[in-house]
Length: 420
Image (cartoon, rainbow, N blue to C red):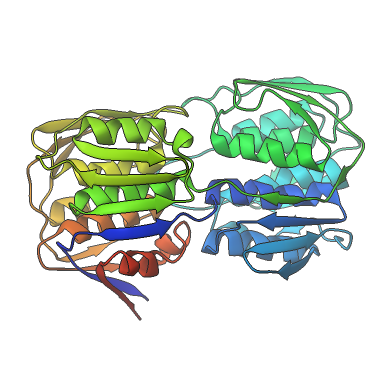
């Protein structure tokens, strides 16, 4: 099992290029199942999760051809409609193939998905919405078995216990593109990745209005045609490098980013004392010279502070003066990183859905273990700021969401290596 070794307290300096969005790539790859002909997806991040999604498409019979930074996917030869457990269990985003398979081929058998252990993430909204569109669904032996003679547009309300659902919005939006009539999705997710998917579907020939709002209006069409599309930059990767530059007291230029997608993160970093300059698609972050200040954070659906940045920002707050309260409203159990941060010298306690972070601490290098994707990133950030050497195990989580992380940090001057 690979490990990452980091010698901390090296200020990061230089430029880093942001890769394509993981959370856009997975549903967009799944959406190619809807299109006749060949789709070309550009700016695809080379990640374990995107590899898994392509393996799922390959198992269904799609023809896949890699190019430089892109992939071509042809779906004419699809004859299999079962997504196997061995692939689906590793990644919750694989549930996104359910809607496209059902819409185009009228049947789908998909294993119940897996992913990071960050608390329950039920798929009831996916199934409820597909049933409203006309699907008949059963769950047998861990597999979702769905079929439909035809899908028909309906009004679907997608409010859940923790707000709108990004993946459920994506799944139902994809299914509705080929449904008969008009579908209204109320309380839809507004995330940039949902907008990206809608733009891709519209490029294929879909008729979707309202992306980026809580009301989506989808007029079904008879067929979609493969096209070329470029994925947006990964806002979570960009946010992670913003924190990396600040936590090491360095100066980092983050290129090929979308600053408009990072409003809440930029606001909290500036509130804590960090300095950020925006130059078109580049963000430059540095410490303004004084001590960091503790700020409170509540994770919320977009445009609120993203849950996928909670762990990374918590690592930063451990070094800030004062006490901060970080409240998790999307996945209330998403605090697996706290124990490991405390092992490195943090002082964090949990009260209900909130973490109380007593700042002005010093991280000290030690052996720690990653529990999920964003927790892994938080441990890397803490290690970059720590005194001495930190060894992080179970780093395969990082491969799911950060392209060339070790190489990019090395180019910024970090003393980091990955060993087997």
